[in-house]
Image (cartoon, rainbow, N blue to C red; front, side, top):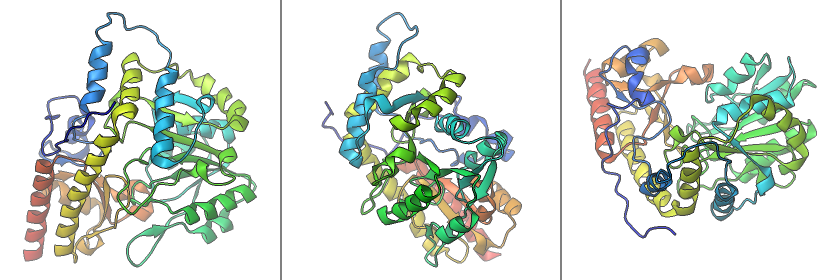
Length: 396
C-alpha cells in the first residue's frame, strides 16, 4: 500500500564522503576533486524511504544466506509494467540479472557468433559498442539522424543499406541514452519490420522507461504486434528509484528464445542476487507510483532551469529537447572548442564533471552529457557555475 505523503526533492543526503562512484572517481577522471559531478547515470536523490524500510525490516532476521529471487518480486514488476506501460509479461519469462550490461553480454553470446554483426545506433551508451567488440563481434553502426530542431530519428535507409547475412542482433536504447528520445509507436514499428524481414533479434534496453515526461509515452518494444518473439527486454529499478547499488534488474525472454538464452545465461552463473535487493526490488514496485510521479515533476523543473540557461547563451550551447531520462544532451559546438578542450573547459571553468559526448561515438563530438537528477539546491549550483563560466567566455 502506497503512503499518501508529499515528497520533497529540495535537498538530499551528502554522498561526497561515501564510496559513491561519481565522487570517488573525480580525481581519476577529471584530474581534480573540485568539480560537481554530473556524469554517471545515478541520482543524487535519496533512495525512497519505503525501499530502505523494507531492507531494515529484512535485517531484523539474523541470517543473511543464500535465497532465491522471489516470485513475488517479479510479480510486482509484472504488475507495474502492466499498469504503467500496458505490457503483459509472464512469470516464466522473467530472469534475474545484476545489470543491463551483463544482460546484454549474455544476449550477444546467445544469439551471435564470432564475426557476426551487431547493430548499434550512435551516439549511444558506450557499452553498446564496447561489449560486442570485446566479444569479437563486428559493430554495425547505424547512426541516428539529427533533424533541424536538434531531435533525433532512426535512419532506416542507412540501416537497410548496411544489413548483411551476418547481421544477427540489434541493440535498442529506449528511451534513448544519451539523446533523450522516447520513440513513437510508428518509429518502432518501422524498425521492427526491418528486423523481422532480416531475422534480427532485438535487445531492448528499457531501463529508463519510467523516466518519461508528460505528452510522451514509452512503448515497450515487445508490446508491438509481432515483436515479442524476437525481443529480449532489460528493465529494472536502478534508474527509476535510484537503486543501482542493489544490483538487481530483470531480463524478459520469450519462451521461443529461452533455450539459446539459458545456455549462455547458465554458463555465467548469475545466481539469485543479494538478499536485501530482493525485498528492496519488490517494495519499489509495490509502493513507488506516487514517488515516481513526484520525481518526474521535480526532474522536469531541473531540466527547465537548464533550458532557460541554454536559451540565454544559445550562441554557445544548445539543449537538445528531452522526452525521457534525466540526461541532458548539450550541443556545445558553438563554443568552437576541440573535444579535449571542451571537456577541459567544463572542468576548469565551470567546475563540473560531465560525460564527454565523444565517449558515445564520433557522432557525439562537440556534445556533453549532463545528469540533472539532483536536488533543487544542487541544480541551482550547477546552473550558477555554468552561467558564470559562460559569462566569462562571452566577455572574452
